[in-house]
Amino acid sequence: MFEQTESQKTIAANELKHLSESELLDVLECARKASSRDHALLVVAYTHGLRNQEIARLRLADLSWKSQEITINRLKSSLNTVQPIVRHRGRPALCEMTALRAWLRERRRNNDPSDFVFVSKKGGSLGQRQVNRLFADYCELASQARIARGEAPIANSVRHVHCLKHSRGTSLAERGVNPYRIKLILGHKSMASTERYLHGSQKQAWAEAQRFSMEVF
Image 1 (tube, rainbow, N blue to C red):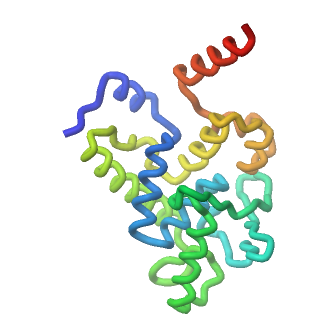
Image 2 (image 1 turned 30 degrees about the horizontal axis):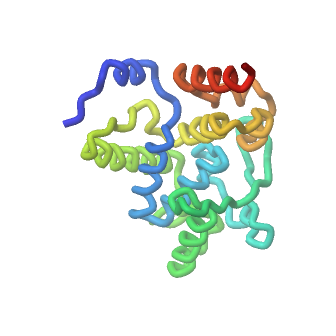
Image 3 (image 1 turned 90 degrees about the vertical axis):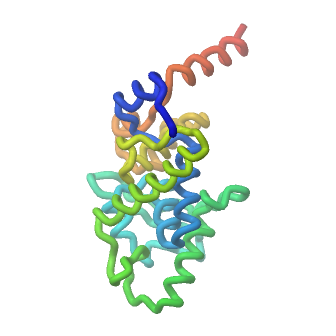
């Protein structure tokens, strides 16, 4: 049985807002094994930093296979953007192109007439609550697997799909992507909005500071 350390309890108490890389991959891998629709939905949400409403409203006309791009119609006064459909060789759980193609092939076999990309089993678009619920379900599945391996489960505070936007922003920042470019990827009009989606740790901050110190001196 997994038991939290004091540091993990402190993190949980501080309400985490993003998934670690290993947690993200565990969640996406669970979805990939279970459902082509759910896997594609979560990969698209993560890649482009989408809210649950934006995922539910995504339409087939927003996908251009000729240019391999996706049009993101964002809410809350965010920027509408056109972004590439991303390939991720070597990590199939993160490959948006493969995930979307697999789901759309299944849709065609089912002859679903809806113009929404992600449809419910009863037809029509997925509801916002459904999107959050399926993400929470995969967080639970991933947590069970993590506990079985002796690892920490995924915190309850990040078991909602909006944490994928926080996770995307944080992952890009940790890889040294320019904050202005992160702002464009997440569809924000102001850097102040983007800053709310960039999270890190004291350990990472000091490691980077030390690396820069070594380079300078």
